[in-house]
Image 1 (cartoon, one colour):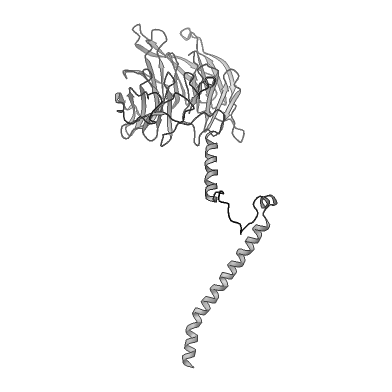
Image 2 (image 1 turned 120 degrees about the vertical axis):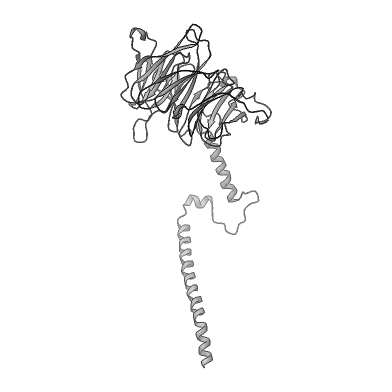
Length: 430
């Protein structure tokens, strides 16, 4: 009897554990069955008709598996996202990080970009709709983070502004023009371009906000390339594109710059800064075509708040500005400022872009088409086209990029778009 009692006692603990586990399993099973019945009961009639419950019916041999269906739909969604707007022509690929700036060559055949991965890429664009582009890649010196780029002398030289630990530098590369499209996709076997000239710590430790180039065709200018580098502080420097010689420095004295631009004929420099006024300087050329001096010319007064961006019209006689006060102004600067004639406000247009709460959005960048009729603007990830004369919205592309747009540029000439010559239009990159 003692042996039997000991045996029962030794078996009672495992037996009770097993019984308790079985009870818990039954509770979970009952709960699962109730949820399953509830799900079946709430299937909409249309869904039930489209996908009846057929547990004993095997899938047809040509029916893709569920995983493949999800993959197919995901790919289709990605393809649809590529062409999210009817004006979207193509996407240039090859960057491994965010693009910080871009610029077209004068002939429109090459697009130069700088990327946060520390590289310059030059795309050869013979056909805007092509799926294959020649790409020339240039790696900047170690530790240099590019912030701006502009084509310099001709169509095969670029000047890059890059930020490093000790400040901003300028690097000029020649022979960067990618060859015509055809053959291999990448131009990897050619020797990389060399630095022709460079300047370090050009704005102290401040970075370069933007870099702009123009040909000196006004007055006695010799059509050489003049560049300006706009610091995030208050200074703007003027450079000779081919030699790299510093030609002058101006100061906005407005706490901090937002951006600067140079007129297409190389005569005027305008700066948008912390205050509501826009300052304009004139580059004066000597009889021997060299830059003699850079003088303050005029001031655009009329905005009630800081000017966020601006651009010159193709005729170099007008400036378009956008302000935090919610307006766009078109100015006539073709005045005799030497005789104290003030620039005239030709038009005041309301910024037509609003957020979900109805507040006016601020424009970050603007660029005018080569014919002077269409103004392209950006605000965050939104790209908008406006009529220069009326300010009317011509089109809007919301969420043109996943992140904020960092720059925009028009092609200086029409480029092919497929085989149909009727589709040749000025293109915009961002």
